[in-house]
Image 1: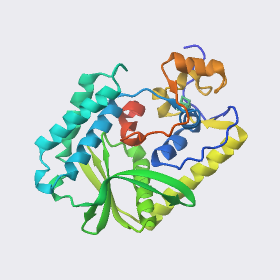
Image 2: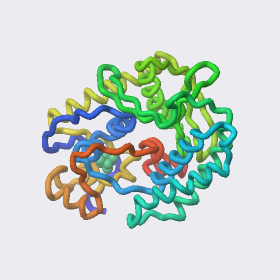
Image 3: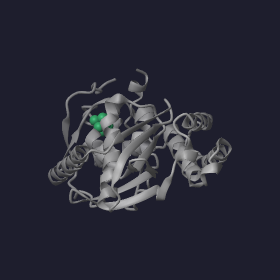
Image 4: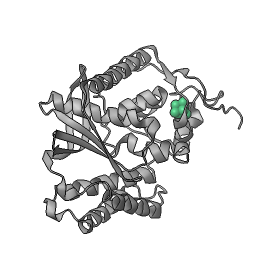
Length: 314
Ligand code: SF4
């Protein structure tokens, strides 16, 4: 295709200068930024909303169903209740994407598979949910920076509090640090709020398994260093009006590829009416200044299938 380049070294792209956002960092925002700052700029600063996908809808529905299931008394946490909650969640989630071309059958089948797989990862009746331990929103400062997190589940386990995250995609070893970094930041946030966390856990619902790790101070330090690094890089890029495009596996699934200068030599400058017109033409919508709702399931939930599909095949 004319003007298309294969993924290569990072490219610095000049954009209109804007102040760095003063919204809190979230685990998803950190992943977006470190994955590709230019993509982050489009999504988080220019606030272009990318289309929903079956994987996102599945992630949201399954998360909602599990939240309701775990809120029940332990003896009532049975598959029939989970399936009923999933059916309810699907009605709501599919209504939100009505008319967007989402394959309903794919969503229904994927959700059912994820929910069936859940029962191979744990016995929910044995989970002791901590007070306010479901879909907890945490706001605090980490490394001196405002941080906002949404934690799927906090439970009381043998060694202490355990933070759990549901992953509706298959585990991808290449991104394990990203998965754990998210959990470690949540552990750091809770610790900061006087609730020290002993363990972090990932429940993979595609290739069903539960993976639990102890929380080591050194690991938290590393996660916080990534947060600080992302913040410093973002400030420097915003100040200079020059954002780094980091071509990689993400590009193949990136909604901004048609206007990305790292991919197309003839692409208009990002942020210009010419560039924006292409995005509009492709169905993207630029939000106003309203806060971004939690994208349930987080970016990491869809990395596997939507963003890293080429790896999923391998
Ligand atoms: S196409 Fe690749 S390099 Fe360009 S913005 Fe998207 S992820 Fe970044």
